[in-house]
Image 1: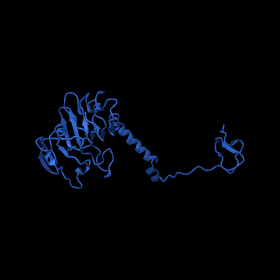
Image 2: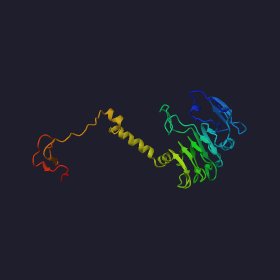
Image 3: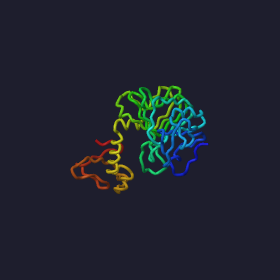
Image 4: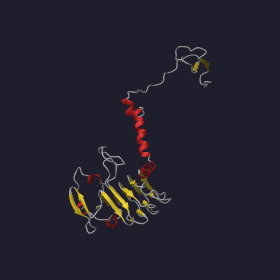
Amino acid sequence: MSYITKFGSFWGMLPQTSGRAFWVAPAASYTVEGQVYSASNDNDGLSPERALRTVDYAVGLTTASVGDVIVLLPGAHSVTATITVDVAGITIVGIPGSNHLGGSNRSSSGSSANRSQITSTEATGMIFTVTAVDVEIAHLHLAPITAGSGISVSSAAHRAYIHDCTFDLGATANTATMGVTMPVGVTAEVKTAVARIAAMVTGRLAITKEMRELDDRFGLTPKAMAALRWKIVADEAPAATGAAWACRPSSQATCRAPSRPTASECHPRAPGRPSA
């Protein structure tokens, strides 16, 4: 039986599932709710107090297509070899920040950073290679090696679902370093991750923040408009006369119905014809 969690802790943020939850610790010694425990692949991994030591071993314990979940406890995980995700229908998740990327019905306060990080220390390759169908990976911060990738989706891994992940590509400044790779023809959904990668690499996050601040300052958002007490009003309807009048700009005078403008300011035109 998987770990029954208490209300109010971050355990309640895990995906709802009828499968088992396997917990993986970032180090041989780790802390959960103030208590220190020892992680080992000899543990069953079915509660945070009996966490496994490696993600790769946890993948081997899962059963295909029954909703099993692998949870990476908060902290800095590291891998020395590529983790092959070859079990269909499993979910691999970290612990998101309280204001995580995909939005939340919780308070908007807190960090948007994912609390579970994986850093690759291998010589070549990627952190995850997904070879099975219906795999979900979420709420992880991944730091691949130079010219490597965070997640590689194979041509057989249809319906892969990757979301709310962040990638550290700045420390490995190389155009061959990738966040997510997948071949042409595979059906997969990558949400948030791609936009977040582009934002982190190009610095667009800071630009976007500045643009939002300007929108608020100039009343270009509904909230800012209300704060500045701006009001949207409809255009005045033209007066019903025998001929429509189109006004040309003048230094001071303007045409307003029902007063007839002077000939120097306006010229008559037939209804429906554009002004000169």
